Length: 341
Length: 284
Image (cartoon, rainbow over all chains, first blue to last red; front, side, top):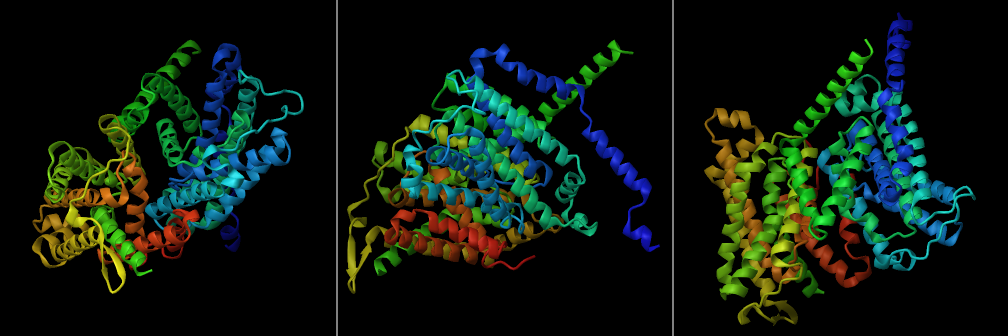
């Protein structure tokens, strides 16, 4: 009898294993999607700079999706980690070494450390407390970066960063081709890691925590440990996004820590849908395209339209959008199945 | 020293009036409304427009600074806020941030992005000395108004029939409804009065806090701090928190200006870490 309690029944382990490996399997749509992103430089040679921004925003959104979509932690201060990564990468390139990959690793470690330290602040309390604490941490960092202007350059930003060639082979060009491929590669590698993680028992336990913390802890999930872990990982991801931003634009300013970054990011994740990893990426594409279009029309007041979008979205637009997505997916599946009977 | 304390108290009182509406909607009704500052800004602009374009004296503009935001609040509550009550906190946050972005851009478009200035009447300018302490006339005026409002609020909430109905509606909507309390009307009224108070605070604050289109974003965090740090079970908590924040902020900006708002944020994070329910709340 004790055996049955200590080790799960073989049938159950089997079932869990099967479910997880089914989730891990690659779908056709995913392969096509990543193929398209890799082919983008040939299709849109003029849009490299915008595409680079999209890739970075997608990575940043992926980071928020990890904690919001999977672990259910609401954060209004995710820019803290973006900023930490950006400043770490920028300062490292300025004062130590101009190699992009080393800088990326340094930035990721710096952001992960900050994430680890602040993760203990989000363990307790309700949604509201978490909102306030994450927001508070981001504001603290903003004030710090503003006060230590001798190090960070204050409002003028970090200037004079010049990056070495990637892997010692590919210099960053003005069209942003290297930049885009670099950002895309980092996004892809980190996406693979996230995909694998979320289709593992660890990912499952996070969902359990999100859906019902009490029940999760009753089934033996160590909630606090898991939250610390995923928060640290998400911070590392955001730090990577920050590093990419600093390295490909060769500039860091206080703007990376601004509140609107965190708020926009929420919108990005919510547009695409939280909790399935692609949400952030799709959201990033839609958001950037939209931002580009609106700011061409009204450069000064584009925030109004972003705000309107948020309001409409929450008031009922989301159901319509997701319904539309689901319907088009069903129609596509029908067409494919008709073609191959 | 005592002058700084006095300024801090005035600032804290003002914060309390600004945030008192939020203390009810967020603290008691558990609705995360980040757009609360927008109503305060509305009040500020009502005063500015009335004074600059129609030469209305400052004190006479104050009732309008209360009424206009209250009316806006009532209309918005009836139309777009109500469906939000039942949604998740995340949705409420997104919704109200969206509102803030819209309001900031719209006000920028209509009124321009510059700081708005008003001329206070002569009897509110300058300061007088009591036992060697310099006391600003305007700040004493603000403190006086805020004390009256605070007492009135506490009285309404604790002693009147409306107050007990509100508390019942907040504690358990269904039971309150079953007992014949018209929860919808109570919430609308509360929301309207909260918005009106914010507007009044915004009008009083034009001189002390400044007024430009980014006001709701700049002060959002302060209002939220007052409510979350103060705890969400009564008005005493937010009141104490507002005073504390006012004094710490004014003193901090005077003695260690290079730290900026750092002190306040650090204080908030520390309090919320040690007492997630707030300083004065009992865990439910």
